[in-house]
Length: 238
Length: 329
Image (cartoon, rainbow over all chains, first blue to last red; front, side):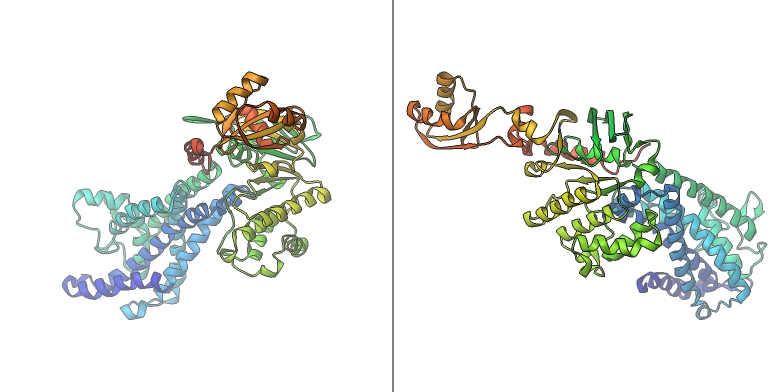
């Protein structure tokens, strides 16, 4: 638990304080550490959910997966249960980071919190489903770790956690826009900063700046596809 | 399909890209029978079990348990079988009690009888005192006993035991077998087990002998042994080659040389030995006579010993890689 929190907090402190001087204000009223904070919450949720598939690989390694697979329960329920389990842990981790908000000068009203938690949970579910789906096709711990690192870091770096995603080179812009994590991070950031999508921080797709609702629709659609894939994968598991 | 057979297997085939693990196997098992699948590692025993317990789909042919088809009625099949796997399948981070609670939840054991059943099976395998301990701290034998307890928790009609005593010390093996025999007597549970221990196969009612994915014999242990057709005599001599040749010349007996011994089978071995000692030219150092074992029967059927592992380790590895935890498409 401590190590799980230490990593994002380290990012926040090092990047937040280190870069806020050089970056100055990104938008009216938004300095760099305020920009980073929601990004780090998003990153924590994302990383925890994405790696939650390790429980499947772990169960396989220790043989327990067999006990689950021969049990008279529907495989769809197994996939759903694994996804919700991963998402719950991710939500708790993200919430713990939220407790540090005042230190970084981010004020969160109860109203924002009430909106933020379900949004974080939705992002967590979508990413957990992806993590579970991938893990269900991976046979060993080593392979799982390799796949996670190969996918997770690009997903995080190209999602707008560490820098605003406007004015990027075209190739990078494309990658950022097709990365579903981008929309998850954006929705969390918009809610935390209370920023209007018209400010310079918003995500623009085909000339249209995404609102929180639109971001969430992208995340939900992606999540749905992943849940279906995970359920299919478990159902055909031998 | 007849109703008296609790397990029906018809022309079962399972093939992988470069290997036919199970090659057209048919057999049936009666209610309350202890049925053994015997064969060396890689013979396809585990693959048969995996198909019967719905973990793997057959390439062709069909199988049913208690009248339910293993490919099309997986839910019903899973509800009426219990399993003890070759490799441990416990959640080692949980306690013994937690493992059993999880099992009773997923097997729809009514909450009202859960506690009682868990206590009953834990006492049976003598792990009641250790119920609150984390499974990771258990010895191999304790884990296996806990798995057996778990496999019995939902009162399965058929219990599958895949090499149930592999890697256990003789004492624990003995105890485990007492449980199994007692269970059959009290509950009428049908038991299908795989083993490559000959002495364990003796406990079964019938044995299906498998080799290279094929069923090569199906009989009672007694029936299989009687195929050998006599007593087994082993000689230690100063020159095994010469002894072998002399046996052929003098008595028209085909003997085998292996393990520094000359071995042959003959009816009425006790009467043969005195004649042999009188007439034999090659110096004999020692003679031993024994009744045929299943190992002898296996040797006769296949031409190789059950424990010829070295030559098969490669095949075994292939089957392990392809046969277990395999996912389709």
